[in-house]
Length: 343
Ligand code: PHE
Image (cartoon, rainbow, N blue to C red; front, side):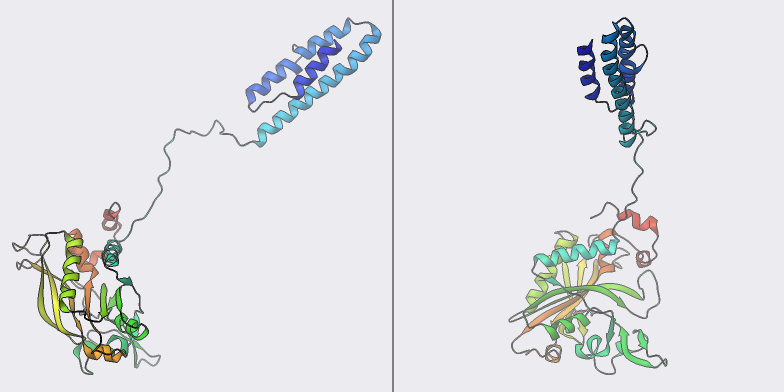
């Protein structure tokens, strides 16, 4: 009997159970009256008195070990976090509300991607600017109409008096900031927000976005400007896109040209978007005026370059066939959600 008890003691102390079911099996087998312990106590009664004494002692040890083990197993079960039965693992997950990029951001990223492959860096500049960087250094004459209150938001000084600061009317200010700080060659695009004091309509807003492009080096010619924008248009709008350059005027470029692309909607046949001309304007451009280079301490005899300024809203409207510019700033979730799967 002694040996059997010792063997059981071994069994009991090494018993492992991690769920309710096997702990109950343990209880029934070793602890309950009808289990092994109960049987052994019955047998104990039949033993001779001296044997009874020693066997009784070890049997009691077994009983205590079994009860301690039972308590320990229960404690372990409670401490381990298990998939409790009141969790329904078959339920579908609660959907994660993820946002999406704004269509203007999507277009900006695409523009950056195209120009980065041509070796253009991305640069940034301030939206609150001084007269020098927004106008004077860009060769605007002192009485140029663009400087007037009609177009420009001036930042007032504390007394309400007109100060030197304004909200930039174009991203061309970053051209000046770059050229002041960096020796040519310079090849960069500069995306950002600009402000103009205009009535809000389907085609105009008091703030919008532009991407400025600038390439200054030795021997940069007009053909480089044309080829760069032609490449961009095909990448952005498809390989069949044609471009057209129309003579134009900007104080900071000479010669200047407006860039049109063939209308994507009617394929050149004429529709409302292109006002039946078959062409849509996407950018202003030109060869950087020698005065601008001089204003930044660069010798125009040594260096030449081109610049362009493109409206991100315009490109986005053509890209996704959006007909009202106000949609970009109204934050209507029904409009914005349509770009969820677009990259
Ligand atoms: N800054 C001009 C505009 O806002 C665009 C432009 C940029 C034109 C660079 C020529 C060169 O209309």
